[in-house]
Length: 291
Image (cartoon, rainbow, N blue to C red; front, side, top):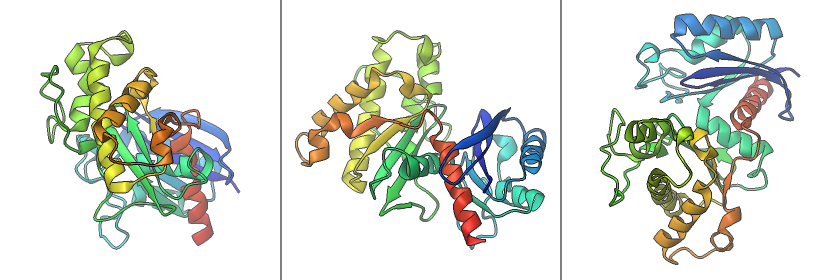
């Protein structure tokens, strides 16, 4: 069964063909430009490969309510050309195959739950820290939706006493994303994070903000594992810093075997940056089964 996977990101679209075990047979990358420029290339790829179903993990926010008249549309995205765009409808009509759609970070969480380090667990979260910050939640074995879908990158955090950066989220200024995502690091330090030394003070600030958010997720969701991915998390020095801050902030309040073994509780993504594509393959497989 050939399955299609579309990981739709803010800077690039990854189109792939794979199988129900998560194996990836072929892929291409297309720059994210306007829908008129980008979508024809995506449609041509999947038509040529003749996928029998398509799983879509797309940047958001998205309308994921199947009973809504705008189900599968983007909503208040900061990418103006894509606002209110009917991603699901355009692809389904063009390809005439079963489709399922979710946010890109939910797809990544699903990938880790189906094929990665969360596959034996019922509850876990995946946090991506890159151009933006997103949180995918798996609860009782299912991806969490709700009124819309979780927007854990926009939680409010306390400011680090040494950080006077005002934040750059266009909606909230100094939410988690506005203080700790890649663009916030670049705006604050006047260069990309990848060009900064490991001992730059910005990593202390970023780890402090991420640890605060992680504590909030622990208190509210009680996940059995927390997985982090995205470009910023390639700064591997962040992991011990985040774990240290989490323990300090929890201050002994949450007692569990996972917290006592925090090095194996807060961990990097395990699928070689394929977690979102593999999650999209799982979405496609589920769509094929239900068709």
